[in-house]
Image (cartoon, rainbow over all chains, first blue to last red; front, side):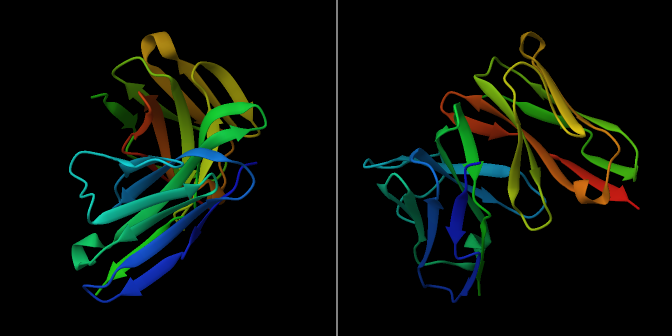
Length: 118
Length: 107
């Protein structure tokens, strides 16, 4: 089946620093990638949608300058949390949608990245 | 926007028991997926099921699109089934998640 990886799996950083999270589709080409945020004991909230080679579309209330998304290729998208603050601490999950074994439009999720900002 | 409601919010089962999880949605959708989020946070695709019934081992799912609900059946539950079960519907170009059902299976 389709595999999506994320790196790093967890990161601890100081307030004011920037953190980059990578999302890769390992065995399929992802035409679209999505970034979600999940707070403890809550559901996933979509932050933004990115298509390869074009600018990301952000959900209402998500700061574009705070959460920079780049989708440079069909297998890689990155999320950069700029000038991170403790309130940015969360579990960030990416997903990728492409075509795998004849099943179309299925989103496959990465393992998530736990960000802690001190 | 669309509303996705899952029930029950919490469920405790004895190992070997069966259960049914429900997902109601408030508008027509392009597709529906069921996921299991394990204790480490990984989301596992269980079913891609915009309509009809599918089975995979001890799990099965049924979606009745005309009545806007889906059911996930877990039979002969095991402790490894513990975690959070989410349904998500594709609305427009986005997946909208329900709040989840927290399942704990006791040995």
